[in-house]
Image 1 (cartoon, helix red, strand yellow):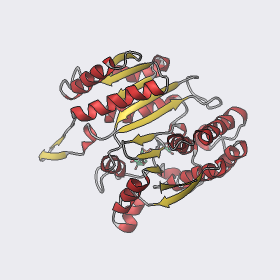
Image 2 (cartoon, protein in one colour):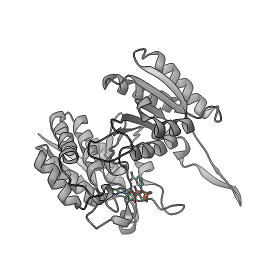
Image 3 (cartoon, helix red, strand yellow):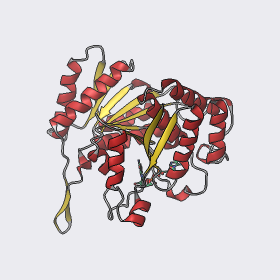
Image 4 (tube, protein in one colour):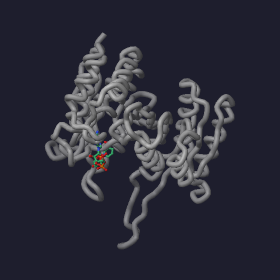
Length: 332
Ligand code: NAD
């Protein structure tokens, strides 16, 4: 069987790390025909459109994509390609499993968390304007429909993956209507999942507790902005964004990508760590039903860290992206 998957190499280190993932998938024996589409800052420069319609149509057709990071200009220029894709394809759930890897130095061992982030609204709705010169307004949009589907996604995910506890992360003490609705809906959803333990935590306290004692958490569900921030914080607990995978999931389509950005300062040097995008590719294979190949890739990555000293510079080594990828392929 041969699958067709949309590939977005992206900007900066994106083409280097996605190529590494393609090599590892090919070595795992899963056959994929890649439909390559450019997006992001470099695509905008070349074609005038950072997120071409043909790319969105390709994902709608194939229903699955592997994506490298794309650059977003700060404060001006085009709208984020990530936000555009997530909304155009209704990829409402962002899933970020954060796990310690033996052999990767970090403050804690045995971290095993899942961050589930609402991906389509909140402060990322992109509705901003200048009220009068010197006064800007950004609207936080929260709908009951989006709260219901992200809560249900989180509880279903916890149940099918054998997780025991969900923490609902919010700031309903201050944002009583928006976060209040998120919390209410999550509480109501929890009643239908009596097998899952539930707790509630205010986002700032959650950030502090994640740093002090991440073992108290299992699955965390939260809105868009809190999820963006806390997933990077959590990545920092296990060695950085270079090793944490991610998935943007909807009912029709899925886009798999690392947590990290395009790292422009190291782009083109062949030193980026491809672990995060390779583990994102493994998540993609799981979702395609290629579980054995996915598990073999995950095991090979784990063994490179546990049994060898091959490391890219972000983790204190001197291996290039290619040498690190070769080491994974040898262990497949
Ligand atoms: P970044 O993640 O690109 O870089 C932060 C730091 O981590 C840098 O020191 C970088 O060198 C390092 N780093 C990141 N990934 C690495 C890897 N795989 N291997 C080794 N080192 C790595 O974050 P940033 O600098 O805030 O953002 C750069 C650009 O990326 C911005 O335009 C931003 O909008 C974009 N971005 C895109 C995504 C995405 O497409 N999903 C996510 C985050 C940021």
